[in-house]
Image (cartoon, rainbow, N blue to C red; front, side, top):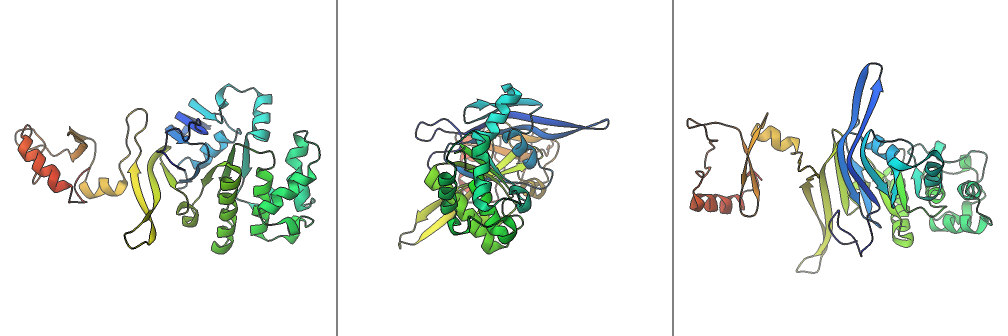
Length: 332
């Protein structure tokens, strides 16, 4: 996958576009804001991990993308479908044909009285597809379980059940697969197997995959990890494989703050705490960057900071910029 997040890949439109997404729940007389103007773009063919603390809005986002919930405000488009304008019948068709879903709880992903191959056939039968057995066996082969097709869930391990769940989610050829903590109940070795199946589906079928996870194994094996904080996307970690001068391959991870469509940026909490930022900060536009400074008024009312160049002094500002380039702790 190439290209920057939010830019078209090979001319294909994005698979997921969320703009200023808001979701408010009413609990008794209280309103709980789960999403607060979230922006997200996932390109067709990407595999992206969504991470965040409990209550950050991850599950709410997945419910909206899966067609089970509606936003209170904002827009959301998946594979060209505007989820805010669908009728009930259109939403049912959307859940059957456009998205596939893998849940965290293995026992809820499969019908216990059906075999693995019969479970994979169910979504196709519900959608009116004929001759489903060959397709079901093909998908079980993709996830490495073609020899276990006649086994019911109670004869499959947790990892095998999740691999069957992946086959079920892929049965109707969805454009997007949503996986909500798919490895949450598995040990690290089994989790690696399940995630390997997701990557294989992404590579072989071209399915766009969005994974919500707390599992560092998953987060470290995708090119892009998006962190959600307080109902908004806050940071993205991009990983790229590079080759060193001696021929060794390594993965470099770079973390970026997310600039949303309203021009807002969430500063990492560590940065805020270390510099004692609060209430307001001072911004300074430079030739190639924006400086963020604590609000520490001096005697003349201007922000003061040890080593800060005087406003309007190009030579001093240029020298400070050069020094900051070699100081990882300098304000961005």
